[in-house]
Image (cartoon, rainbow, N blue to C red; front, side, top):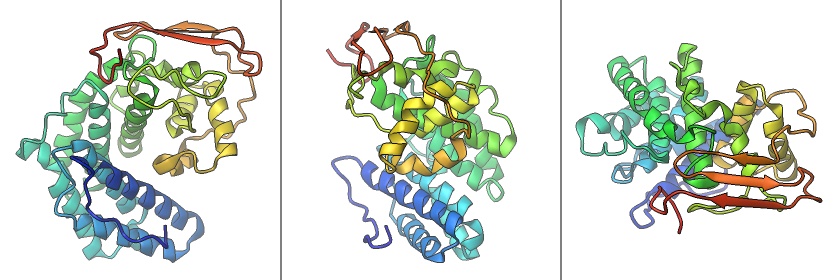
Length: 327
């Protein structure tokens, strides 16, 4: 990252999402590397990345996922590098988070996502709550409104996990939405020592088994919805495994990290907080046969959890009009 040019505000079609995601990946990795090494080159480069995106005219609020991911990037950078940032830079970051993100749902038309029932609700509320917590000391009223807005509405998206922890939008969007859902809960607990009951949403406590269940012996997922079939380690799996005392859920993800240390992408540094210390062993205790229930029910069957011996088949029901559904 140190040798790359700074990011440009360059949209792809109607999206700035790739830029926001790259900003998040750069800032999280630079800030964490600085914390681990004390090497100020990483702090200074992270500061440059932060100031660069703060100077963008906006973060493309017409596609609000772009705003949410950029907000998380700055919230993490502001928090992890706080002591390294000059007071004038801190103010620039706070002003950007407030004016280019937190105020928009309350003062502009860019709020259609607030009551979303798909992954948008998880991503946008998760990103904005992180921004609210970062700026809460200086903007307590706006932070409170943002957090209250999330608590009142993110459960509409979390309803998708019921009853068995599956996800109507398939494995790729499970990864996207659930990661931000975990970020939201972890951030609330870090700040307030409570998640206000979000982790008790029906199906959420067992959704950590979903990705291992829908991954076949080939290592590819049963991609019954609009997403790819590739599988990388998921930081959210480590949080869910640790939170609910199910180390077997994370067996495959630990192996994926061993084989590809870049597997976690822009959320990779979060594994350092979320991965449990104990070795989960090799026995997953997951069922050979599983039915999810829900609005887009799936049924998974295999004869063994040994990938060298396993035969795997998945079935999908439900309507093709579901979010990211496929005929």
